[in-house]
Image (cartoon, rainbow, N blue to C red; front, side, top):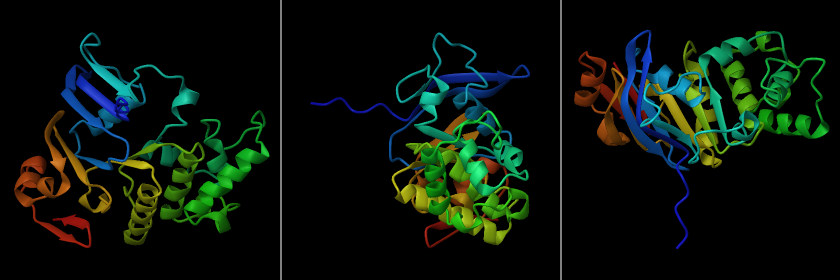
Length: 262
């Protein structure tokens, strides 16, 4: 019998301190290929620390018993890993919002840069792949337009395209609707659903229920650096559990596979 493939992401007993305070506490979870997942928690729950552990900006406090593995491995060459995993953070979106065109932004994904520089050798294959990524997000007509002249939703999709040029197996999306208006939020949700249906595993990190697309079936709830729930989305997103998570009484409404909280 063939062995099961390793999970995309595996945290094992991960504790990380920031400024002397535990930001993650004994966190353990796995995300398998195709398991679209939301990691949901209020501000200060440890979500950004979790992402920085993935990007190796932060490391577990007790490395002898704490492990962060991607596809079963703890060490990767950057260029090898980015062909498997894309990460889109708000910091990256802000850095990319410059007078570079959508095409230049997508191409910069090949060089882990912001924009294209004279030392970058762009091949016809790269340009073709970048245009395909823009087309996937309905941005091909805007390929030559600077991001500074695009709507917030278009900018976010252009940065998604930047992550897609490597044809990754999974994408981690950090607060993708942050600071977006209603129309832009809808555009971003549609883009995430398209990614999920295309076979890319979507891992959403957010505190907004409205970000959660119907294709996501699993929810991991994070509070004060600890996982307080890990299971089916329907069991997680109810008023009692979310009131405990956010520390205030909330109401929840579900319609057409989307959730809203107030």
